[in-house]
Length: 208
Image (cartoon, rainbow, N blue to C red; front, side, top):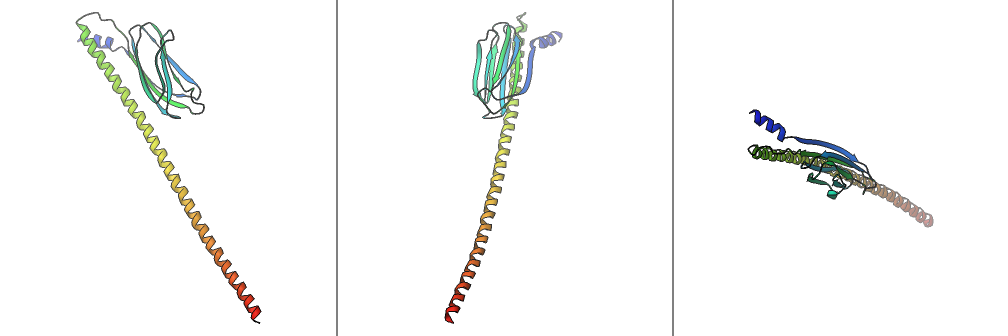
């Protein structure tokens, strides 16, 4: 039992972090993680608000070589296994936009590599690592669903507002047309009465 507890604590040496940032127009936001060789890291992200809901993303190794790059995506994921010790940097760029700020939610998680010291322990360790990765994947999917549901709800509310104001505009135009028609009919009636009275007076004048 003690061996199993120690094994669980050592194998599940994971790092997990969740963030929500606003990337202003024409700017980028960069972050980094210090990894050792064979450490694993996964970055998942979702654009929740702003513009066309797209963002540029890239991930580089300590020497500046690009390991992953995604252009104008609303959601994405990048996974790496560190080949060398050092600082790994990932950036979210909104430099393509000149006006719209973007709100980005992202998660960073990984597994710290622990060398296998016993052949008996290795299979159990691999299974636990696999379970840990699966749980993190489920967590990322749940967060993605929450963000997507919020975005769809915002879209529905925006559509409802547009329909409401379009209905109000139609009602205003309808009432305006009705009021103008009533006014036009009244003016026409008065003009016809004046015209008839004028003709009657002229006819009476000449009959005398």
